[in-house]
Length: 78
Image (cartoon, rainbow, N blue to C red; front, top):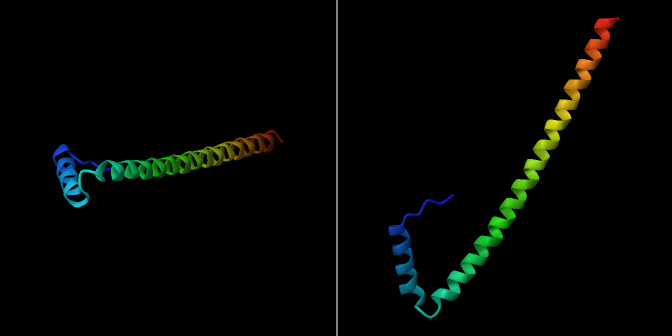
């Protein structure tokens, strides 16, 4: 995801502290954390659904390949 080093994080926090002040900073950070958590939850849910769909597609392809091989084997026997 994001690769923020400790020095960048300190700069961001100092700028945020200057802009919003020490009283509101914890409240704002909590809100940002909630937004981030809900975003990650939605992202993970979408990822899981996509992986399930991919697995389903792979199963269907396996079934089709096995069915084709059965038909080919049957044709060879005739």
